[in-house]
Length: 157
Image (cartoon, rainbow, N blue to C red):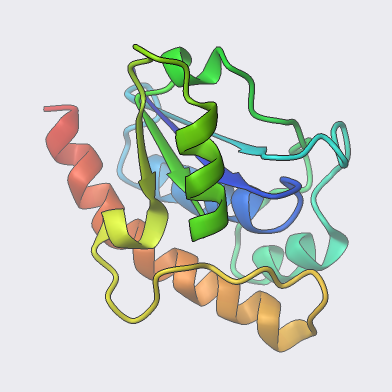
């Protein structure tokens, strides 16, 4: 089982959206038993909360169901539990690099850069934005998940 973890700030907008988009792609590819996807935040502020209702609504319009997810803070054990931990922006990447225990096995990377998306490097936080911001986040995440799936399929072969 290859395990992927997406990380943003509160785990209520970007990272659960990325989790939902990748889960759908994994399911469509028939890789449910080979790839596990999760998400977490760098903060515990929203721990136990459902994703932001705007993230849920915009994802649902695209057939991505994330309402059942619950926010959590990344834990030291995640760096050994997961194979790949993807930060949604540079601040998260810096946090993850500092938080990663020495000798932990997870690869830590910036999501869009790892996926090879050249049009943007960070997935911006839509929390204080409007509908357009949530749609843009979905567009960026979907553009990154396509090449990410190619990489994952190579990893699990």
